[in-house]
Length: 427
Ligand code: NAP
Image 1: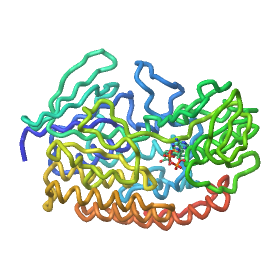
Image 2: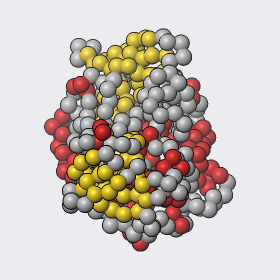
Image 3: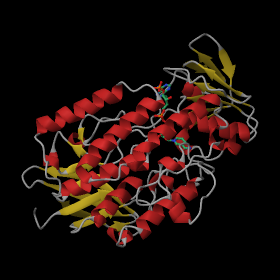
Image 4: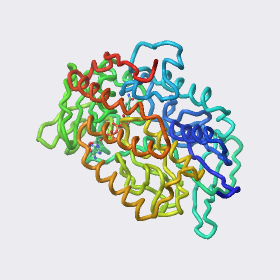
């Protein structure tokens, strides 16, 4: 292993922090520098009242809203080396805590368990403008901009870990006539509070996690009605009064939305709950992964290592759609830190072997249809990674919690958060 190894981590959200955490846990640590454009850690778990751009004119990263509660049970979010009970010194009662509670918990692990001051590795308020790879030197040139001083500098790194996640660049498809819609049009990334839509009839386009959460928020904040428009499959949720499901949007005229089944409705506002794109505009094009988000990107080995280029020195953490959220990310980060440090005896593989691996997991991911299938898939991915890292396997037990949770959601989407799950990690 080269003594001059220098690792760049981009982003200090859960993915970047897990990466720093696992580097810090290893017996010998090389130079690691993390760039974070916000002035604090936590990534999308930070709420901002701003929309569009931040105080420096940079795109707001986080799509967090004011009163977000987790949509998955917190018992599926804890770590084998750090639980909610350990952090708070007691059982906090609910399985679906507020955003601040989750951030506090994660920050507790980063602060109390890493064994060193991770904040010292992070350059806050610093945005990465470009990452370019040079084959000749097998190194990356990273252009960074200190937002407070305006300084722009060029840094050299042997390895780059992209940890900004895939939930910050809105996927905002256009629909015929939407540009002339007589009302407000916004993406769920910029949704802050259901109160903004009080007394309104609102159309949500998309029917996944953001749509269901926002529909419930709007109705509990005095909204008049919400239509959830699905594209591929009707969610068939047991919605509370005021929320209905409709098929795809055909077009808009004035305030009227017309659906593909020929029906129509007048609405005051439209919220695009159409998800996100895995865009990394600061990366030179040949270093980018597929824009379309998925449960496994075929260009990645072990959910992290970029196979096509850069001699196994470029990594993406948190590039998968989520169910096992921070836990899968943490396991991938543990693998990545050990790989970079040359601690995995069976690695590296040949490009062909790595591509076979990427194709295999991507192929499996494409078949996933239900929550139990997704949970089992991600658990088997954790199992596969853990084989290399001796990573704690206990939370593969979370699969059975996700199965229970799925049943609760199907029974009554407005009430699934009333279920209190038992932690299988807390003593
Ligand atoms: P998502 O899960 O990727 O869902 C995107 C939705 O948009 C899908 O219903 C998709 O339909 C639809 N869609 C995409 N393109 C469309 C088009 N051209 N026309 C119509 N519909 C279109 O995105 P998300 O719901 O924003 O969730 C993103 C992540 O945030 C998830 O990990 C979720 O768990 C998380 N989240 C968490 C909370 C919470 O913790 N409380 C709340 C919200 C979100 P098809 O499936 O048919 O393509």
